[in-house]
Length: 544
Image (cartoon, rainbow, N blue to C red; front, top):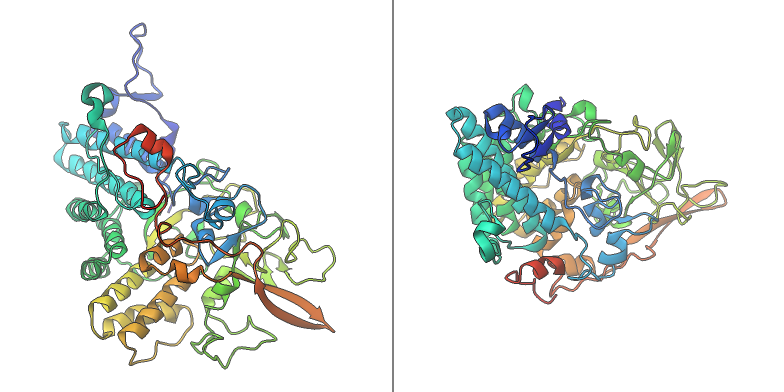
């Protein structure tokens, strides 16, 4: 179900604090600083405006100027899951792969500044509503939503930069002077702040969003945010406990039956979704189908902005529960895409795959094939992205597909990982959580008798596959401190040729697919020099 109430609020022009004494006319199409706080309904429109500015991922310096997860350079391009297509001006290729990010060349150049502008709006809402005469129930609900959004923005900053200044009141340069410039809080302080905020506001948030509040935070969203930041800093016992609150909440969360279509507009608000960011075609739409589709489709052209790597493809198990490297008996070197995990077919367009009303081929040797591997403007890996790309949407047409931030499968994965780190030996609850996800994928249960280290590897593998192309992989590599190992080898592609009528599959290094990673500094992004130029109390991240 689409919430047009949240989206249509962006049509209102908020003219906070403006005044012209020569006019004595109250505008009917604007909410002024006076009128917005007159009643809870107007304050709710101000809240909706903040929701409309939510980002599914940080906004990078890519020229489309969009949040990463609806852009032509999503965060999985900053990992071993995918590389960017043959497009110019792409930060993941031109900056991140080269290890060139620095205070003067920040990948997410305006994200810090823009996030704090939104945090200020949250603080304004919280202060104004807290001091209002609104009915108590409406006051609590509005403040809880504002605190959730503020915590969300802090979480997004922490993922990139670590500890950041925690500002919980509206700052005014005229009144506060130099006091508006605050140093960074530690990462632990930021996590503690978010933990308390989420637990406090959960009491005032609904278990389920009503029809008029679709897209707003619920108890489950607050707990999902809390569990995520706990996992980020290794508070495993606490993260497992928080995940259990969601699992036992009675909100009805469960896995949606079809992994491939759970992201599509027709299935929005399904039982797996805990929190998503709202979009509506033509009103507040996206054109990810243009960015992510293959170069040539039967109904248009795409930018092929996300090219899955062979490294990711090799992690998709066959139906016997093993990968090629693990000796699957179902692997056929002459037909390597047969008998795979269902998520493979829902996520990857491979050579010979049906797509829309045609077939996509990346193999060499087909005349006039614009999708051929290595062609200018075609895939750099031999693969195209399928996950979250709706074949019913014509590339370039505005889409209203929401962007999911947290879903129930991730909670199961978070719980399993956290619980495994706490226990000396994996228990049944860990197996149950992972096997539930594997069952939907058509895979057998994990083998019994795994030790803690073996289970950790299985969970990390499952997490990579289940959450591929959802903006999670980079932050997982960072928190596990495995990026220097993962990025130590060139990422690989699949080159397919035809020899006497037989397909020949060769795994080769991707051109430009070696990521330069300095473990002494690259586990965080640099603070942009423009930020430190305005506030000298902000310390730079180490070794930048």
